[in-house]
Image (tube, rainbow, N blue to C red; front, side, top):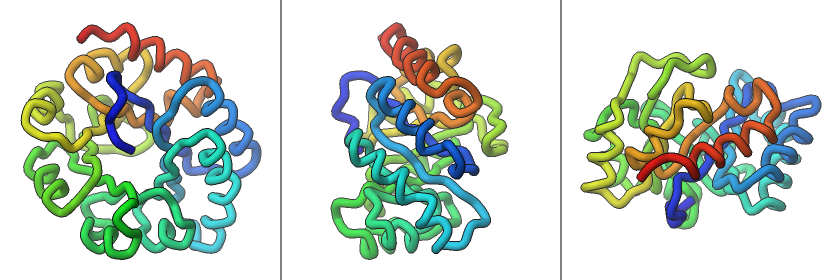
Length: 211
Protein backbone atom coordinates (compact mmCIF):
# COMPACT_ATOMS: atom_id res chain seq x y z
CA UNK A 1 0.00 0.00 0.00
CA UNK A 2 2.67 2.53 -0.95
CA UNK A 3 1.75 6.20 -1.03
CA UNK A 4 2.87 6.73 -4.60
CA UNK A 5 -0.29 8.57 -5.60
CA UNK A 6 0.07 12.35 -5.81
CA UNK A 7 -3.17 12.72 -3.89
CA UNK A 8 -4.59 11.13 -0.78
CA UNK A 9 -6.14 7.68 -1.27
CA UNK A 10 -9.12 5.89 0.26
CA UNK A 11 -8.71 3.07 2.78
CA UNK A 12 -12.07 1.41 3.51
CA UNK A 13 -12.71 -0.29 6.84
CA UNK A 14 -15.45 -2.89 7.04
CA UNK A 15 -18.45 -2.63 9.32
CA UNK A 16 -18.55 -5.33 12.00
CA UNK A 17 -21.33 -7.14 10.13
CA UNK A 18 -19.93 -8.36 6.81
CA UNK A 19 -22.53 -11.07 6.17
CA UNK A 20 -25.75 -10.88 4.17
CA UNK A 21 -25.53 -8.51 1.22
CA UNK A 22 -22.24 -6.95 2.28
CA UNK A 23 -20.14 -8.57 -0.48
CA UNK A 24 -22.41 -6.92 -3.06
CA UNK A 25 -22.06 -3.60 -1.25
CA UNK A 26 -18.27 -3.92 -1.26
CA UNK A 27 -18.36 -4.64 -4.99
CA UNK A 28 -20.39 -1.47 -5.55
CA UNK A 29 -18.05 0.62 -3.42
CA UNK A 30 -14.91 -0.57 -5.18
CA UNK A 31 -16.49 -0.11 -8.60
CA UNK A 32 -17.31 3.53 -7.77
CA UNK A 33 -13.71 4.76 -7.76
CA UNK A 34 -10.15 3.87 -6.81
CA UNK A 35 -9.60 2.42 -3.34
CA UNK A 36 -6.12 1.58 -2.05
CA UNK A 37 -7.03 -0.88 0.68
CA UNK A 38 -9.86 -2.63 2.49
CA UNK A 39 -9.55 -3.60 6.14
CA UNK A 40 -11.44 -6.68 7.29
CA UNK A 41 -12.54 -5.83 10.84
CA UNK A 42 -14.80 -8.25 12.70
CA UNK A 43 -15.03 -8.76 16.46
CA UNK A 44 -16.03 -11.73 18.61
CA UNK A 45 -15.94 -14.18 15.69
CA UNK A 46 -13.86 -17.36 15.88
CA UNK A 47 -11.19 -17.73 13.23
CA UNK A 48 -12.89 -20.39 11.08
CA UNK A 49 -16.04 -18.27 10.77
CA UNK A 50 -13.97 -15.13 10.16
CA UNK A 51 -12.15 -16.92 7.34
CA UNK A 52 -15.48 -17.97 5.80
CA UNK A 53 -16.76 -14.39 5.90
CA UNK A 54 -13.50 -13.03 4.52
CA UNK A 55 -13.27 -15.29 1.47
CA UNK A 56 -15.74 -13.56 -0.88
CA UNK A 57 -14.52 -10.12 0.24
CA UNK A 58 -10.92 -11.05 -0.42
CA UNK A 59 -11.86 -12.23 -3.92
CA UNK A 60 -13.66 -8.94 -4.65
CA UNK A 61 -10.63 -6.94 -3.47
CA UNK A 62 -8.31 -9.02 -5.64
CA UNK A 63 -10.45 -8.35 -8.72
CA UNK A 64 -10.25 -4.61 -8.07
CA UNK A 65 -6.53 -4.64 -7.17
CA UNK A 66 -7.31 -3.47 -3.64
CA UNK A 67 -5.05 -4.54 -0.76
CA UNK A 68 -6.89 -6.83 1.69
CA UNK A 69 -5.76 -6.00 5.24
CA UNK A 70 -6.81 -7.97 8.34
CA UNK A 71 -7.47 -6.04 11.53
CA UNK A 72 -5.72 -7.10 14.74
CA UNK A 73 -4.97 -10.76 13.99
CA UNK A 74 -1.60 -11.84 12.63
CA UNK A 75 -2.79 -15.46 12.74
CA UNK A 76 -5.89 -14.75 10.63
CA UNK A 77 -3.88 -12.67 8.17
CA UNK A 78 -1.49 -15.59 7.76
CA UNK A 79 -4.31 -18.11 7.37
CA UNK A 80 -5.95 -16.00 4.65
CA UNK A 81 -2.66 -15.12 2.95
CA UNK A 82 -3.90 -11.56 3.25
CA UNK A 83 -1.98 -8.62 1.82
CA UNK A 84 -1.28 -7.40 5.33
CA UNK A 85 -2.37 -6.77 8.89
CA UNK A 86 -3.26 -3.69 10.90
CA UNK A 87 -2.13 -3.77 14.53
CA UNK A 88 -3.41 -1.79 17.47
CA UNK A 89 -0.98 -0.99 20.26
CA UNK A 90 -1.96 -4.22 22.06
CA UNK A 91 -2.36 -6.53 19.06
CA UNK A 92 1.18 -7.76 18.55
CA UNK A 93 4.61 -6.69 17.46
CA UNK A 94 5.52 -5.46 14.00
CA UNK A 95 8.61 -7.66 13.95
CA UNK A 96 6.56 -10.75 14.78
CA UNK A 97 4.06 -9.86 12.08
CA UNK A 98 6.87 -9.47 9.56
CA UNK A 99 8.33 -12.83 10.49
CA UNK A 100 4.95 -14.55 10.19
CA UNK A 101 3.65 -12.78 7.08
CA UNK A 102 6.80 -12.17 5.07
CA UNK A 103 8.60 -9.19 3.67
CA UNK A 104 5.87 -8.26 1.17
CA UNK A 105 3.10 -7.95 3.76
CA UNK A 106 1.69 -4.50 4.41
CA UNK A 107 1.88 -3.87 8.16
CA UNK A 108 0.16 -0.88 9.69
CA UNK A 109 0.08 0.32 13.27
CA UNK A 110 -2.38 2.48 15.20
CA UNK A 111 -0.41 5.34 16.78
CA UNK A 112 -3.27 7.49 18.13
CA UNK A 113 -1.87 11.04 18.44
CA UNK A 114 1.74 10.08 19.13
CA UNK A 115 4.67 10.79 16.83
CA UNK A 116 6.78 8.77 19.28
CA UNK A 117 4.66 5.64 18.81
CA UNK A 118 4.75 6.18 15.06
CA UNK A 119 8.52 6.50 15.08
CA UNK A 120 8.80 3.27 17.07
CA UNK A 121 6.49 1.52 14.59
CA UNK A 122 8.56 2.77 11.69
CA UNK A 123 11.80 1.63 13.29
CA UNK A 124 10.25 -1.81 13.82
CA UNK A 125 9.45 -2.02 10.10
CA UNK A 126 5.85 -0.84 9.76
CA UNK A 127 4.74 0.10 6.24
CA UNK A 128 2.33 2.78 7.42
CA UNK A 129 1.16 4.44 10.62
CA UNK A 130 -2.36 5.54 11.51
CA UNK A 131 -3.25 8.65 13.48
CA UNK A 132 -6.65 9.36 14.99
CA UNK A 133 -9.37 9.80 15.89
CA UNK A 134 -9.45 13.17 14.15
CA UNK A 135 -13.21 13.53 14.66
CA UNK A 136 -15.73 11.83 16.97
CA UNK A 137 -16.41 8.36 15.62
CA UNK A 138 -19.35 6.01 16.11
CA UNK A 139 -17.28 3.10 14.77
CA UNK A 140 -14.64 3.09 17.48
CA UNK A 141 -14.51 5.34 20.52
CA UNK A 142 -11.19 7.09 21.13
CA UNK A 143 -10.05 9.75 23.56
CA UNK A 144 -7.12 10.62 21.27
CA UNK A 145 -7.53 13.77 19.17
CA UNK A 146 -4.48 14.54 17.04
CA UNK A 147 -4.37 17.92 15.36
CA UNK A 148 -3.69 18.70 11.73
CA UNK A 149 -0.18 19.87 12.56
CA UNK A 150 0.76 16.31 13.45
CA UNK A 151 0.14 15.22 9.85
CA UNK A 152 2.12 18.13 8.45
CA UNK A 153 4.98 17.52 10.85
CA UNK A 154 5.06 13.82 10.02
CA UNK A 155 5.19 14.51 6.29
CA UNK A 156 8.05 16.97 6.69
CA UNK A 157 10.27 14.55 8.59
CA UNK A 158 9.29 10.96 7.75
CA UNK A 159 8.82 8.95 4.58
CA UNK A 160 6.49 6.29 5.97
CA UNK A 161 2.93 6.92 4.75
CA UNK A 162 0.36 8.07 7.29
CA UNK A 163 -3.31 7.23 7.55
CA UNK A 164 -5.88 9.57 9.08
CA UNK A 165 -8.78 7.84 10.82
CA UNK A 166 -11.82 8.64 12.93
CA UNK A 167 -15.16 10.16 11.98
CA UNK A 168 -13.96 11.23 8.53
CA UNK A 169 -16.59 12.26 5.97
CA UNK A 170 -16.54 13.86 2.52
CA UNK A 171 -17.56 17.10 4.24
CA UNK A 172 -14.69 17.26 6.76
CA UNK A 173 -11.82 15.45 5.01
CA UNK A 174 -10.40 18.40 3.05
CA UNK A 175 -8.14 19.79 5.80
CA UNK A 176 -6.70 16.28 6.42
CA UNK A 177 -5.79 15.98 2.75
CA UNK A 178 -4.22 19.44 2.72
CA UNK A 179 -2.27 18.70 5.92
CA UNK A 180 -0.68 15.65 4.34
CA UNK A 181 -2.66 12.48 5.03
CA UNK A 182 -1.60 9.83 2.52
CA UNK A 183 -4.73 7.79 3.17
CA UNK A 184 -8.17 8.42 4.65
CA UNK A 185 -9.48 5.43 6.61
CA UNK A 186 -13.26 5.53 6.46
CA UNK A 187 -16.05 3.29 7.68
CA UNK A 188 -19.38 4.76 8.81
CA UNK A 189 -19.39 7.52 6.18
CA UNK A 190 -19.41 4.83 3.49
CA UNK A 191 -21.44 1.95 4.91
CA UNK A 192 -24.22 3.90 6.67
CA UNK A 193 -25.57 5.19 3.38
CA UNK A 194 -25.12 4.61 -0.33
CA UNK A 195 -21.59 3.22 -0.51
CA UNK A 196 -20.99 4.03 -4.18
CA UNK A 197 -22.23 7.59 -3.76
CA UNK A 198 -19.99 8.00 -0.70
CA UNK A 199 -16.87 6.79 -2.49
CA UNK A 200 -17.53 9.22 -5.33
CA UNK A 201 -18.11 12.04 -2.84
CA UNK A 202 -14.80 11.28 -1.12
CA UNK A 203 -12.93 11.40 -4.42
CA UNK A 204 -14.55 14.71 -5.31
CA UNK A 205 -13.62 16.17 -1.90
CA UNK A 206 -10.03 14.93 -2.16
CA UNK A 207 -9.67 16.46 -5.60
CA UNK A 208 -11.00 19.81 -4.37
CA UNK A 209 -8.81 20.01 -1.25
CA UNK A 210 -6.23 22.80 -1.49
CA UNK A 211 -2.54 22.01 -1.50
